Length: 62
Image 1 (cartoon, helix red, strand yellow):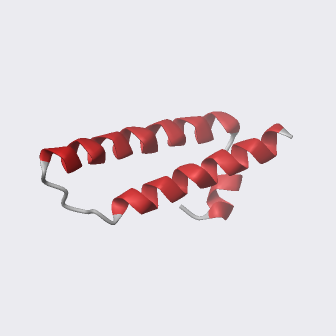
Image 2 (spheres, helix red, strand yellow):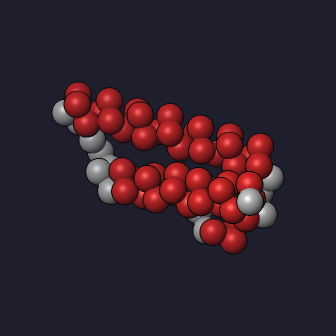
C-alpha cells in the first residue's frame, strides 16, 4: 500500500491491517518450510508494508 493511503486510516484500521499482513506473512513462511512458495517476492513486500504501518502508528502515538 501507499503511505498516503495508510495515513488516511484510523488507528484501529491500521492495527487490523497489520494483523492481516502478519497472518499472510506467517502463511508464506509455512509454505516456505513446506517447500512450495509460489510468490517469493511477497516476503519483502509484506515486511515493508508492516514496517510502514508500524511507523505511522508510532507517529500517531506521539
